[in-house]
Length: 325
Image 1: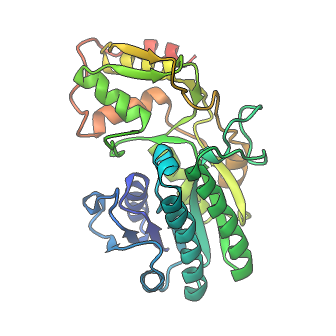
Image 2: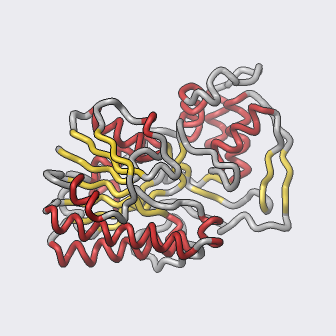
Image 3: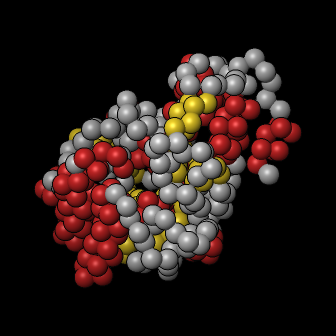
């Protein structure tokens, strides 16, 4: 299969490029390098630096491509509040430009990396794909709008489209920007460097943390699965984990005990969020394979920023299993 990965030099995009090459596929990558690094990519990938809104460049890269994995996006929720127009331009405008180029190039399928943030607060957990979305930030709105554009234009242009709503993905190589960094690598970095952990609210808010390898399983499966046209599909671990539980897991795996500071004056975001995976199982054959403990262990072992920095106390698998109950 010949593939194009937009945003392919980012955290998820580079992991996908490696998986596709390892599976014997031909891979092209487009990335503007605003958050990506081409050094992450395997040597067999054809890399092009450029903007996802650049239709002529897209059209050139899309020649003879069978499937597009659309991951290019601005991804910071707090930043989107400050710059909603830019997020709309890139995340929505880029998706529309890609759909136009795909139409002209004759691509058959698009797999879109959407986000669980489109759900917002939901009264029923785990969250199913047919619940009414309540996006609470421009980033989430842009992802939801991009889904609708892809489905609508895909129907008009006779292109198969599927959107994967990815929950809190983490793993080796995840970006750590100076502000608003993802919680798993941020907390692990702070634990290993002796810094305090700042918890907004009381830490009882829950999220669904899904390891990068499991996300790759879902993305690859979506590229060839039958009966997924215009489907939205959750991709998560299916395990609800509080921030306090996450910290306890990081402590146990790393063998270190950081100072934890709670900031009750600032909200920790929505109270609960965990994926219902029934649709992913039935349409993609998806079953997450990596538990939170195993994922953090992999992060410590494989990410050069953390490798070899575990504390002195031994990690007990028995203790770790207790944390998951």
